[in-house]
Image (cartoon, rainbow, N blue to C red; front, top):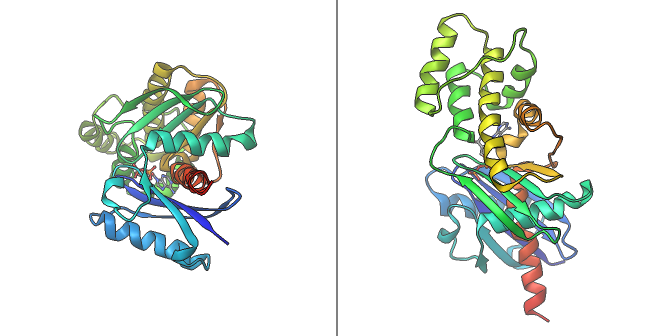
Length: 267
Ligand code: ADP
């Protein structure tokens, strides 16, 4: 059996996806990017293949994407994360009846992408200048609140009072604001919900710049946070499509393209 791989070397996490000849997802693996992008990417691929009993020789084509894609010289090709995300979301979105807008929140940037009805990128907008509105903001907040990232969703729904307003638009100032709110006796739950709404408002502003059409697909690591999903749905006044593996959509898109390029070349 032949396989095809997509390797998404993100600023915060490395994601690998493997698809079979039919383009079906065979497995995913996620690990921290750390400072040794190339070494960690190779190790992530090795671990995924080992877990699924696949030899490296069975991987006939590999496409790298993401922030660190140029570092992975062994790749057969590389593509931008916008293109890979579009392909992955279009493919995964079929099960939900098709998607036309993608909201992606990553570790250090966020994007909104509009797709045409063929799944091609029609328009996109990106915020990579400011950490507020990205996963980094959530990482810093969780650390300040002394809770795990995975717990943010539960805190969001367990507040007794209304979500607090977080006024700071910069992560560094938001850090002091959070510490100030804690010092004034506010509950972590209301602070967490406030942080989610602050990110949600920024995200919806970004999405409106490209135009919002149904269905709206939400991916990237922060899409694993159910509290953030709820806050964005609230601000957007629409349901979001959140796939089973939101963090690996871009890697999946690169793997799908790897499969398609392989068959196109061997035609
Ligand atoms: P990038 O591609 O820029 O490296 P990712 O899409 O991999 O970014 O997202 C990384 C972010 O995902 C982290 O900064 C973190 O905030 C968030 N994240 C990762 N895992 C979880 C989780 N289990 N629950 C909530 N958030 C998560």
